[in-house]
Image (cartoon, rainbow, N blue to C red):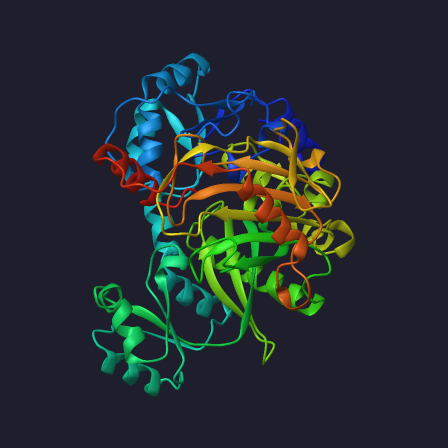
Length: 491
């Protein structure tokens, strides 16, 4: 088999790719645009964000199913749907596997189904991913790699007195943050200052064998994606994170967007984060992990320390930004290196040279994304919703639909944005429901990392394009659908 030598060979390989590659997930959001780089790349989704207009999105006819409790269950439903099975078998090459498949989340049941379908999963095993995804294990991996976390202790906590004893033993102070091993940080990160606040979260904390108890610091979040390859760890740009904005999410610690910008984060912080991400990648490689991962960092605003937040062993909500940036179009999207690592094709690549180029601020352009959720507790059925495409922000603050579109980079002005609709007519407003994702050039946070007025205008404008029936008590079947939607993280 011919060895691919450098970026041009790798790009050419995927432009001519003959092996079907499927992204199976609730929506195409995380890898949107990858089909423009990879021939025979198909999105198999549960939600039709584009109303049938996207040429490479397949949404099978809905059939009866049990209430979904996770995105893994959605994926398993999709993979066993007869329309999807028929598609995979029709597209399968005469020899070898029926194709490659990638996921946002998957479990051991997914692995079993893929084995029956002769699909090659292009990720480490579910067991290894779960182990790395443990926030406590993340802390240990960071310590091993020489990448420190916020001052913390890993310990069992079964009462308020035990929590205070742990805090005093390790000098963590009165203001604490407690995390459990798994779960979206918006739901499983608890800010505790007194016994009353502890009681609010006691059941969730005490059922864990061990939790992470941290000193509370004034910090700013950032995120960086990277890819472990046989030639070393490739590191993407450091992005700001939007967290906990009440205009976007009902969750205090909830992620709600990112910015890619050369000027948003000081150079010394970017350099330290990149160095730390490389160290984390090499620690993962020693555990036989390969491919895509994301690292969250916390910069202490008082001391300037850059701490490890968590490791996500997968593509994430930030992946669409990483693979959209200018450096990705000049060289190749980061996810392409993940795919080549799992392709079985030998390749050569100067990872050091690539990392040097990607660290140059001149190779980073400015983009932002907002993940807009329903923030009220009321339940109501959606009667109209803005379709996916390009919108314009008018001087009076209203938002106007311009055209249908599946490609985000067609948006080139800050008064325009690409909207990926998640919730549509017939779905439900409920607390935390994902309404959609808005992507636009430029920064949406300003001095002090507060939302700019332009960001607030976009949020108000897109929300105004939704309408719903008066809040009523849903029927049993309707309540089941609401519970289904609320039971897992779509993105």
